[in-house]
Amino acid sequence: MITNPILPEILVGTVLFIIYALLAFGVIRRKTKFIYKVSMMLRILAIFVLVFIINARPMRKDYNADVEMKNLDVLFVVDTTISMWADDVNSKPRMDAVMRDTQHIIDQLDGSNFALIRFDNRSQVLAPFTQDSSNVLDAFSTISSPSRYYAKGSNLNVMEKDMMDLLVSSSKKDGRMTVVFFISDGEITDDSQLMSFADYEKYVDGGAVMGYGTEKGGRMKDSYSYIKDPTTYQDAYSKIDEKNLQSIADDMQIDYVHMERMNNIDYVLSSILASTKSIVDEGKGVTYEDTYYFYVFPLILLLMFEFVLYIRKGRL
Image (tube, rainbow, N blue to C red; front, side):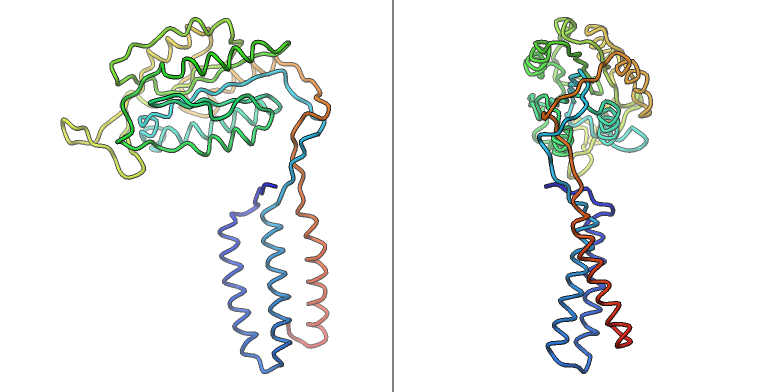
């Protein structure tokens, strides 16, 4: 069971709690029998709980649904080094734009299989290829800025084995396309040399290298504060290295896209969609069914009961 709230649950819960507290205070002050007070407070509580649940939109996973799928495996390879939290994408951290843009890609390529690799000092497969895009989005949500004490410089080679393993596994599936979205600012700061990505090209049918950042650069920040340059004691800046990003794109024979705006990637997505085919997986898909309507009927009954009481007594 998952939720997809209409309004933020914290906001709705806080408002309902305050209203309930005020109503409860008024009920307690009334000169009426104790049993009537308890009954009224329980009825109001039940109404508020049902409102909270309906707003939360509980949804049930169906793992045996017939769904239309695309013959497409989509691999995200995301740089999560501390420089990806530099604040030079519309004055916000680069990673904020990454989260926005990857959500856009997942929405546009809905029905595909998705996988996610993140890398900083080391590489980690956060999600292998799956039809359940919510698992990949959940994996994205776990990404956070590394501590300045953990960061050891940027290296664009550490994901080499994980990336190859997932690409090879995708290539073994008959009739499927494999696309890669390599996401980074292109910086290398640990004195390593950028490896060749040419060996990956035979496994890649499309995608893009997506570059984040500006030539001017942005200040880097971890979860505590802005990072200082140890030599100058001034704010440390990170700048995009488009030469490295273009080299990676050329090796894999895919486009390099500087992600100044979300729609910069749309022409790549249109090309991918034009090349895909839809297939129906019988009983193999994952869908989400709303269950909030189960709570609407008892809410209506309670409200009708309170309305009748109001008509008869002239008050709640």
